[in-house]
Length: 204
Image (tube, rainbow, N blue to C red; front, side, top):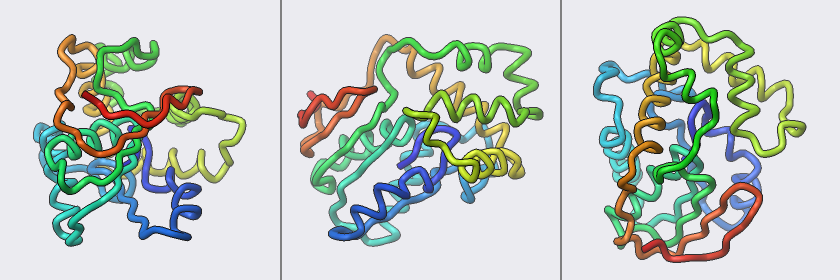
């Protein structure tokens, strides 16, 4: 489950390795990649994102899964594991958002008028690539093909308003002093944050 501004290709390296021993499923989260923008932007929120993923898992008939999620995908993966403790065997969270934290200046700027209004219509390629560099651990490893994919995905019909709506969701969540309640997660959980691997923990 990928993060903001991203798509399922973010997991290509993981998928190639894990597919040797596991069935691997990646998806474009609602509003991103080839999934496209929702018909009703006002309905684009955490609740609907989670409901869509729940429907995805049910449609595929997956009785038990191991989930890996990054950023926005990490929040959704954790929510799913909390709501369905018996269906998640293992959980990997890479820099998930959801808890109060400081955010990059670009996020704060993008969610303030007039940038928030303009951004729903105009997002120059340099803004997209800057955002890509921001969320990528080692930007020197980004290929020209990856830059091109991110810019082209940004140009898809309806993508820009969804990106701005997502930034608002992120901003609201990270400024919320009351973090989500994940104490019902029972899956063995690996939390990875920045350059440190914190080990295998149970979130409580």
